[in-house]
Length: 431
Image 1 (cartoon, rainbow, N blue to C red):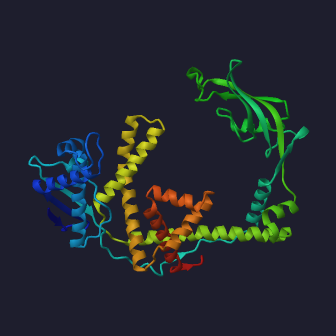
Image 2 (cartoon, one colour):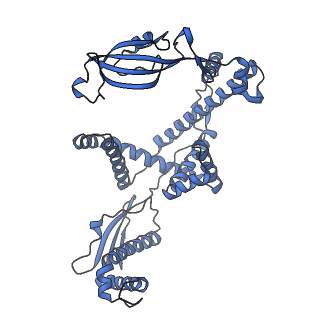
Image 3 (cartoon, helix red, strand yellow):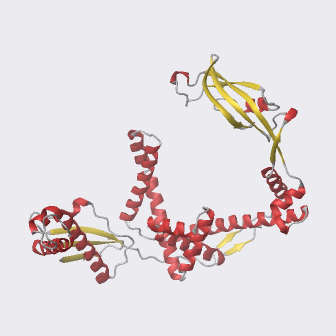
């Protein structure tokens, strides 16, 4: 095997591999012998299958394996002997792995390298806090929302439907006194407006609706109707009420018990409890904003030559994902091709920014020895499981089966880097 490595470029190593025909065929024969020693074929004793039979049955697959073996060997040898730092494994198209007419195997491929660059100053970066105090109005509003969320339904009776209540109703769309769409037992309120009906007219017209009463509203027949000729024409939406319910909010004592638990005994305590939670949420949002702003400062100040092949591959992946989403949404091939061309520049810019951010995060993590430990991974898996109401083992298996372990480690590292930047920043109070 002859190997040549060109490292004249900073972001890519060009590897040329040549395997003479006799050396390649020696490996193929060895591969066929290995297959013959293990295969069971009708009419032949184990290990006694003729070479011609093995060649006919397994030759193509063995040659493919031998090609991949030589490529992997060349890749590993090039990395070790030239102290390369690949940022990704090379990708070879099937047509690049064809044998020459004389039976030799020659292939050239590129290995994207992790570029060398200097980090700008990243400690003590100045940023102004935008954290604002929690006001009484926010506390009142939150308690009102909590009270509404704990409301229980009761029959509205003679009061009829109000803005907070709902009705279980049968609904029909009609055209020239003929029903063209019907649904039974739909849950409606004053803001769940049927398509084609004026929202304000519907909200006003539904108020005071009682059980067994009927209301009608002018409408434009919607586009989802099966009869295409009726779409967009004038029609009538007819709502016939079944049960009409009002929502009764809990009193202070019940609200305190549900929201505050054993820690809260009165409304003053509930207000303090709510204020503390609002402050925690505000601090969390502000921490995220500060971390993003600091990382953006560093990215803007960092000069790095990116491996073009990596940017192209990631941009292509983004465009392919867009095309798949459009296809699933029923878009035509013509529209998909137009969108791919239109989004190409933006996808390339996004890919470059994402790759640059990854390199900066990894380099800063290495510089500050922000290591991702097994405990970090276990903790993150537990958090993911809790958010998705799953078990840690189920989440771990999912990440393992989908080869997402490296992605998870990168996400954990980014969290550590972002927190490090914030904790080492000069965060100033607003004037």
